[in-house]
Image (tube, rainbow, N blue to C red; front, side, top):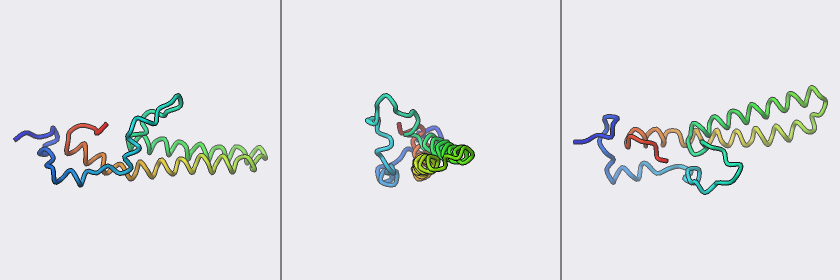
Length: 110
């Protein structure tokens, strides 16, 4: 019997239902454009972009607090950290599915 490269047998059709992708709109390539961020379809990329945006929001808040422009820093922080938190949650939700898919199929889903 053949394996998928990781020592697991190929996925049977009844296991396909357990591999349903959470948030499938994140892996579609129709979100193109000039400002598309590469790697967002992968959970690790989503997590890393989220952490970077949260850090940038905190830096913006601290930098504007020192300059006395806190009224501008708070909205920048809320937007950047909110988007970062959303991306981190999306990456965390998709990570177990991605690992299970690679373990069972032997290749990434995208």
